[in-house]
Length: 204
Image 1 (cartoon, rainbow, N blue to C red):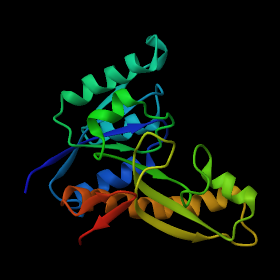
Image 2 (image 1 turned 30 degrees about the vertical axis):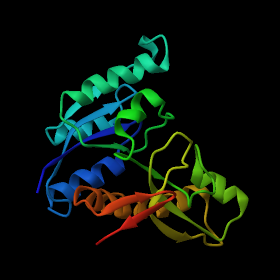
Image 3 (image 1 turned 180 degrees about the vertical axis):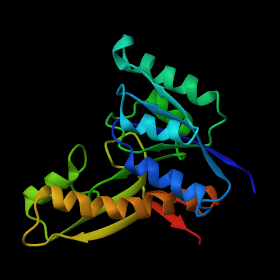
Image 4 (image 1 turned 60 degrees about the horizontal axis):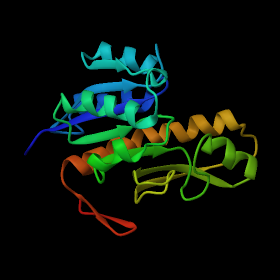
């Protein structure tokens, strides 16, 4: 089986990045390697996680570029150095533009802390909590031109308990993110995902 090199884009602490690395290292995701981690935030803990595992960690400062295409072209330049076949957004807090998306359409996957299509965008857990839902969860999906609108790969439900706070709910959702994100990556690497219009067909 061919090896899939992975680039991960991050903006924060990188707990979902860690779950991907751990599942690769323990063999749950076979024939794959995280080759580079790119952050748009300087000094983020996700970059430290990458370095701890011997993975190239790069900060790309968006303020150094006149526009979004310039910023995304720099990310593409870095990714191109590593023969990347899959791009993961693991807490990457920017909307991906066409400059970055087009070369990786169908090969870019995001994790979102809500049951899409409900509560897209920032702070999905807080949105769901404030809305008073009884069930929330998380979604892994392919990235398209919209904001959290791409074809859904896996979702996991999480109950909202009467005594929950938004933070407690977010932690419970995060536990499930750490399970379904690596599972989606495994399915992609093994060639078991097919995009069929709005649907993702899974052969497993």
